[in-house]
Amino acid sequence: MVREGDILHELTADHALTAVTFSRIVALPVGDQERKTLVDEVTADLVRHSVTEEHYLYPLVHRLPGGAAIVDRELLSHRAVEALLSELASRTARTPDFDRLVAQLIEKVTRHNGEEEARIFPVLAEAVSPVRLFELGERARRLKALLVNRAEAIMRRPS
Ligand SMILES: [Fe+2]
Ligand SMILES: [Fe+2]
Image (cartoon, rainbow, N blue to C red; front, side, top):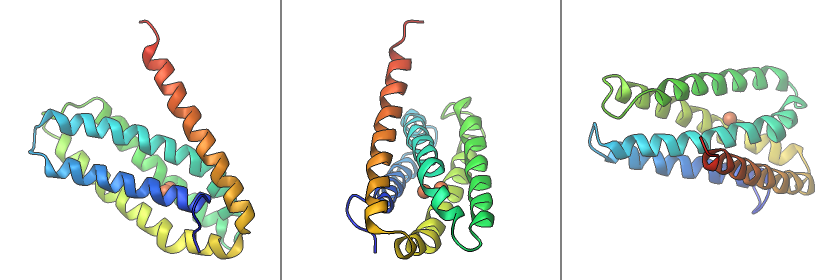
């Protein structure tokens, strides 16, 4: 069972936020500049989410039976998403392949998040103590706040 405040709850909330941003992107007309703004927003959310999972979630998965292979697959999936995000970083909403890349991003991330929620989170909810999952939830929140603050500090830096 996923409990309020534990790391699985925290990561599921991130997935839900990403899904909302994706639906806002697809609701906008092709070429609309706001699509790029939302892609930038989802990029920052996805990077923070992946860093958090790689720090606190995947080490738990690694200890499960067959966990090493699962982690390898999940990391490959994170790297594929990052490659798409870095392609998108150099595009505008009017670049010809922007929409194809956005569609690929949505498909990959939605599948990845769905698999985590269906096949990984329930197993961890059974295998790891609620106290440990809550403690990792606290750490995940602290790490994400730190990453937001650092990103804001970098953006404020005089050029
Ligand atoms: Fe992930
Ligand atoms: Fe995730």
